[in-house]
Amino acid sequence: MAQIDADGWDYVSLAALRDGNGDPSRPAAILQYGLLACARIGLVGSVVMLASEK
Image (cartoon, rainbow, N blue to C red; front, top):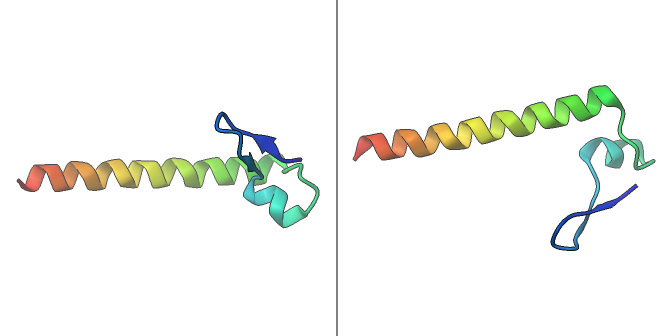
């Protein structure tokens, strides 16, 4: 099932796209949010490293 965010855009999780039913399983959702958290940590780390070089 697609959900609508605050901007009015429809979105579907990666797990829902894979399964094709729009209802992600719990392990797939945990993996998806874990990868999102890692990406954000990496982004913040990159910004901190860039700022510390100057």
